[in-house]
Image 1 (cartoon, rainbow, N blue to C red):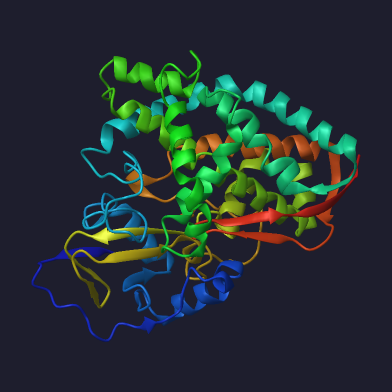
Image 2 (cartoon, rainbow, N blue to C red):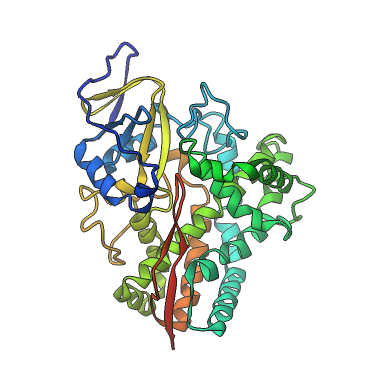
Length: 408
């Protein structure tokens, strides 16, 4: 499937499928799969009347929109709010909410800072940290909450250290990220819940991005060094650091939660991983495809854009259902199965194209390191009671995953 820019005189198609469903309602956030299936079956593009946006839920259309940054811009905001007309609640991201040429230099810097050399430097230390954490958790007993004990703990141990922010105040990272991802959706109760702390949390995050606050060695220092070389401006440096703190914690926490839940509900796959620990990274990507911690992102049409038989008018918002695309049976055989024999590459859980998640390899290393450490000690893992979702306008998140394990 391809998208083709049309002249601005093109007339929007009037017989586009329409739905009045609210994808941000608590009912849908609790279980979005029926909505995803309905939207995929309705057509390649569906008009969501409640928010007057065009939605894509099939893999081909979502993938094509993600890679077509000329037709579907990010600079007008990757949430429901349209930056052409509305002032964002914080300065826009210079990576996620920017397009070329403004996007290019910060992206290059972050790709280098988070590149293979940096990850090789971190790998052994993170493996030791993961082993220590698993030992601590298992020493307390064989029943525990996989979210609180592992998924929400390990990234907050290792990632802020890698960035170089101080220990004090790190508990602010998760509520700040939660609000940032809620704010991509409508101004609903989830946004209101975080609103009272926005000023406080934003001020704290801004402070952590200052050169004087960051450790002399780490991702943050490397970003500031890039500004010294002229690769980015001094004004861009703190915003680049902020991008890591905004998008690099919550998403990894929920990605690790997803892979732990997948294993707790698919015992044969856990045994397969134990037999072949090299599958740890495949397992994380398959969990990201299967669970899609980042469920949605928006784009804005830069001109009248034709998608199939539908013309999306210039300036209209497009809601891309990454999670629906990741379970589209047109692309994935048996899409609802978590299966380590699958090649999950090509999933859109990290986006695609020039705006694909710049920190995805960091997240993979964190997840694979923790899962590998757990597999060394744990023979079986299964649910030990009802799970609980954490609702967010953009993220598919867990609040609690109680598990029971048996040890070798």
